[in-house]
Length: 383
Image (cartoon, rainbow, N blue to C red; front, side, top):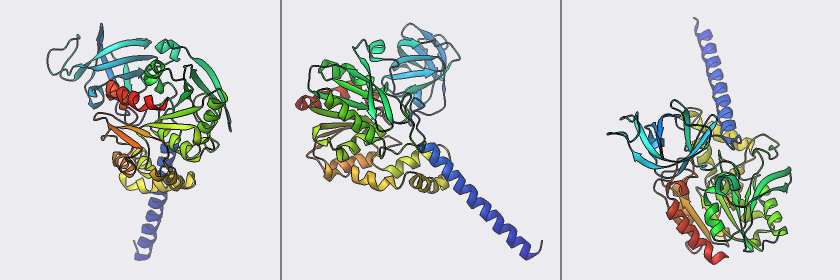
């Protein structure tokens, strides 16, 4: 091949490679930004597990990092859902259930809420423990309500309580308004009215106009609508409680809402404080590491430089209300270091509970008793 031809071919291949890289970056950005409520929560998206057997109060699962994680979780598969508790047997010696082996883990089976856990069933562990309505899952009185938003009506659950301070709960990535049910029994005992909301992109809620999520930069307006709804129904003060991106939505609303004067406090589980780091973490599941900068840039272009507005919304100097953060240092999606820096900047208002085994959005799951005690102490002065 002549030198000129060689150079032309090389240039063509380089251009093709660059174009493919940009396309891959855009694809990864779209995957990271696409609403995924009710899908697989990031941090819990390892390989599916197999049910190897069950016995009264026990289920045997494939041994993996997911199946060994301590705490209380949902177990979900095609046509089935269950609530599971802590590990009873690692499978490294004689198991409690027929079929236990060095490759399996035996966990407490609290109850099966849908379908059957048959041997061979493929399942995933999720921080979304309960499924259905608060009445069905927890026996708590609740009302299906509709919150008027700028894109249309958004379904929510309202749980009545005697206090004038409400809690508005905002789920995060890969979950739905079912997720906040993990703390509803505690809030009910403390007599807080609770509004567990959906927002754009959720099942039953309006779709975002551009088809992607904005890490709170647009979704906060749906929480603002929920604030108006709560105040219209008699709330005098509101605690915003959010998981993952829901925590970030709460920070946006506390910084931007015209009703922010009614916000009495914030409870944040695994808050996304570094937008770019979270996009990289989500995109890394889709593309090679070398393409992650392209994915971040593509995501920024699709969301109109939301990173800058997020930096403003999560500026600790803007805080005027107390904040409780529940977070784990092993969170691979939302930066633990960012949480520590955020708290260090405002030690007068921000308290952090470190949850050692807490994955993204799963602090309560890993340490229910510890997190509920922290919640009780934080919420009591806010009533």
